[in-house]
Picture (cartoon, rainbow, N blue to C red):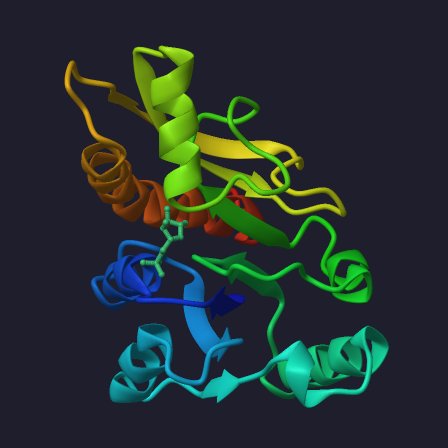
Length: 202
Ligand code: GRF
């Protein structure tokens, strides 16, 4: 069973899409065991609590240094039996100790077709501004494994969307966000299936 913790900082629309997919049985072998946000007022915490999922405000600001914050994150993950982490609109750097503990078991969603338009500072509307400035005719979203560098780990799955004439950054962002809501459940479904115990050959 994939016991997923979802980390987010904002509205939680990606988390919502994953939650609905799990509730509808579209991600067999997976459940959401925990939600964490660095922002006590984030929508993602409200959505999780309404669904009866343990949801905690955990922020570096509550701890004297990154190491003690990392230990707090790891103990929360452990306490809830988490074996997989999905970053969904999480705007903070994951402490290296946590990345190391979950190497190969932590993914993120980025609102562009990595490796294009990724890396430090490329988040939110800035991504879409960069895509439009570049003249790319396609953009999209990427689910990738998390390593120590931003938006750098192996790609799990991508979903392409067209860039349309006259697109504003906001219009492109909305089109990409819709793609994210399809992509993340599909990516987690693939991962859960790969991790399912090999079916007994009859
Ligand atoms: C969006 O910009 C999305 O592209 C990125 O995180 C932001 C908000 O996501 N992945 P959410 O609505 O909080 O899931």
